[in-house]
Length: 113
Image (cartoon, rainbow, N blue to C red; front, top):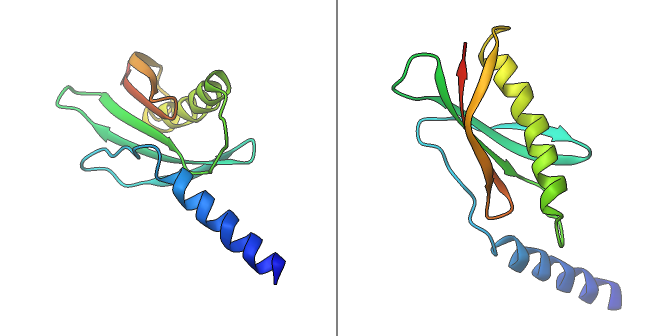
């Protein structure tokens, strides 16, 4: 009985922590899930109005208690690099603007050159 009560408490705490940050969205995009260092990330990429320019949003999809912003940024940048290469189909690319939003959501505007 104690184990069941503890499981319910842990589940409740996980749900309440999950609701503590705003999950980002990117209009006109579909989410892809990718795993880096045991963490799941939701990746969304959509073109801007400028040719060969894209917006990208990377949201951590794994619950982490007391996340390290520097480590989260490094993981998100690793994911971003993969998707920039994939989106640009082997062409060179450069990030125009990027950063961690709220310590969790990584946003980027990049261009295939």
